[in-house]
Length: 157
Picture 1 (tube, rainbow, N blue to C red):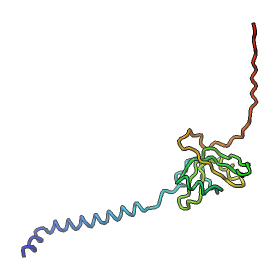
Picture 2 (picture 1 turned 135 degrees about the horizontal axis):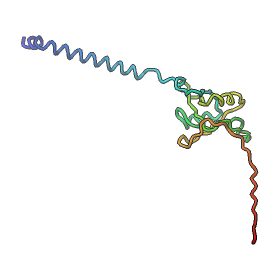
Picture 3 (picture 1 turned 45 degrees about the horizontal axis):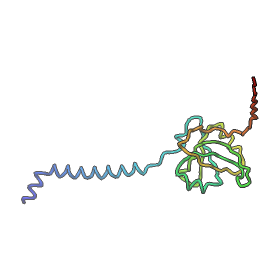
């Protein structure tokens, strides 16, 4: 009898306690749903004037073991074994595909994308230091050696 009387006197406290437990269970469930939500879509963060160009790397096994999600590379085409590799781009950003980590894409300016797409043959990546001074998306410049002539004049008095 005593317990029934105490429950009747404190019924509003018991109801508040039950409601508090139910609310905390629902808030915990909704926070788990938010953390499981879809990851950020890469195509929504491409800067203006840039494009993401998918490439097939011949040395992708090595690159996969070195970079996690992105990095800075020099991009080559040709055959490095036969010493016929040609540099296409310097210090470009490479991104590993979030849904298929075996695939890569490079983030380049639109004018450089056309040059990459016209290249036939194998692509090779050489990893660069992220902290080094950036000259982003610069086209590979052909090496031209300038002949410099230095003339010395002996003036005897």
